[in-house]
Length: 144
Image 1 (cartoon, rainbow, N blue to C red):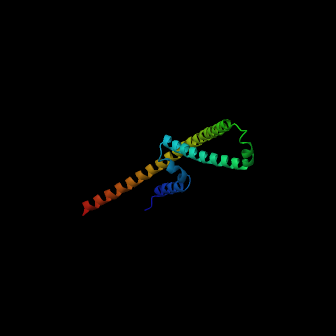
Image 2 (image 1 turned 60 degrees about the vertical axis):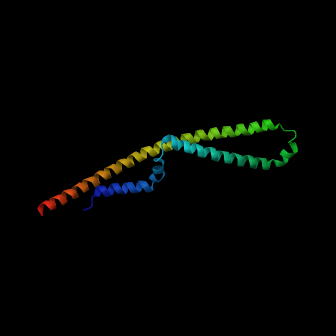
Image 3 (image 1 turned 30 degrees about the horizontal axis):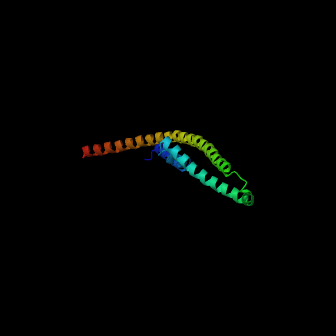
């Protein structure tokens, strides 16, 4: 006989795993600090690559002007501006990434807590069924 509660729980769990659980279940494997730290490390490399690419494109766009006026330019000041711009961009995006990933992690933990509660209910149902089967087998042996 089919246990309707078990089927209902299994359906909810399967829908969760295919829906929002697809994003949240991998997050649950990390500690909060590890998850956010990994996101910040990715942010560092992506911002660095993007900044170098953007600086390269801007340099290429103004290449004629740069080559004509390079002897008049204060290269130290230009270097300081480039580094300060990079640091400001990195700090700004790191703060944004930290906030976004913290919110995402806390949402995932809340969502997964409910998922594990449903798994616990399913486990209890399986344990009850297993116990019933064992009791039937013992009862049948006693009659024979």
